Amino acid sequence: MMLAITLDDFGTGYASLTTLQSLPLTGIKIDKRFVADFLTDTPSEAIIAGMIAVAECMEIEVVGEGVETEEQRARLQEMGCYKAQGYLFAKPLTRAAFFANYG
Image (cartoon, rainbow, N blue to C red):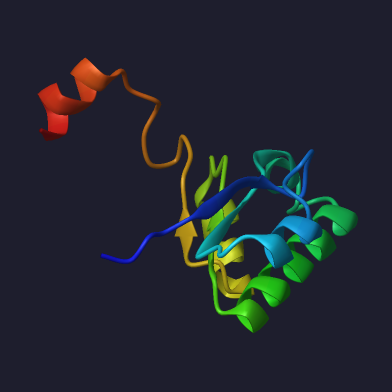
């Protein structure tokens, strides 16, 4: 069984570029603060593009967090981020609610 390690909230706090070098990561999750306004904020879009480029070079998966609109999802996909999570897909569930609906 292969261990999968995805770095959450990439680009903030301790989830930095240095972490990419020191852990055997299989993926990164782009923090929702970048996703929230990247369609109208050029610096956020540029940062996301850079994160995706780094991940592609390292051959690791990219997940966009906090995706709330179809436009965000489509633009992330155009940029090379093929996985996303957020209210567009589902609201957070308790464990009991998850198993009641999907278990």
